[in-house]
Length: 142
Image (tube, rainbow, N blue to C red; front, side, top):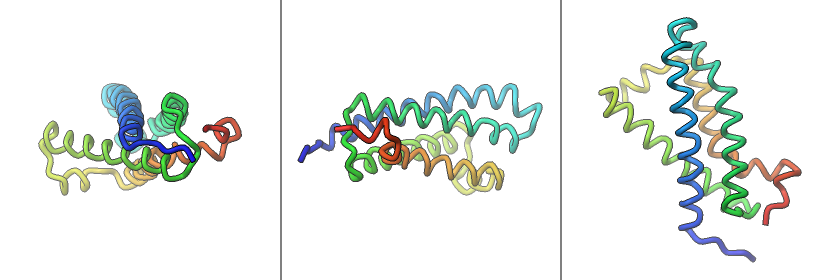
């Protein structure tokens, strides 16, 4: 059985987080500057979600290949869970520090529809490294 070290898992999770955080930051600029004034918050956020889903797929695929993550559930779940922890920490820190919002204000400010889809996207983000084993091209990872 191939044993993988925690340092390897943490590096993979950090890379995965950084890729998605970067894409989200860039898409957020487009959303805030161009889409939000034209479509409103809900539709601007919803329009961003398919692009984030594609980014999640490609980033998860890249991380699985780059870090040679085995198909074992535990390893890939840990990568996704730690990346999610990094993402939530960054998001909450940005809300509290940059936007000067309390956590309660931040949660209350979310649109109920696009906010719900955002939560689903976070769950997809966490699960994607593991879900890739369901695809024939990713099932053969060591």
